Length: 185
Image (cartoon, rainbow, N blue to C red; front, top):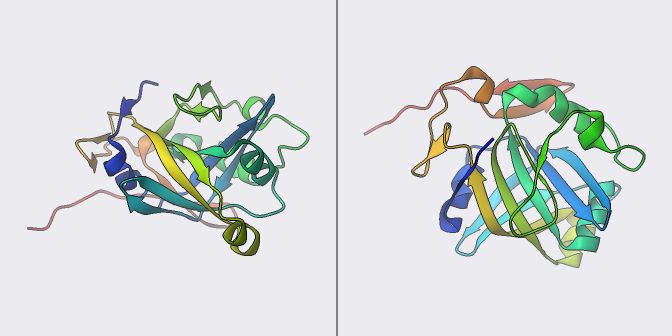
């Protein structure tokens, strides 16, 4: 997978359509990945995002220790792995290996990127202990953003392949994939 850089002031466009995401984290020789249904852009310049990460997760521990994380937008092609990493703890297994997720080094942080994702946002944690402890709400400043040029370029999604559609989690293992875009004058 080869990603193209996305200008940071346009990084919000990668999340604007509300996809299910995966969050990767790393600290020292430990790493983890989880799925998250609640994420949103927060600001344009500097680019910031918000993700909800339950206080009992292994990811929370790694993110708070390292001060960084990635927000990954998976494709329909890896929906099974999205469900697997979202329903398994990384405390006892390496979910990247267990679920055959291929990693790519990030440019500005240690947490890995994943191939077969439509887009990736590298984030530095903006510590807000009250929000983190009370609402499980984590704010990240985007330090690099990447997208698959086959599906995102010039600030727009243009998905043609069924397997390269973003996915949206409903509950109980049910997803739906994003539909076709259309323009209104």
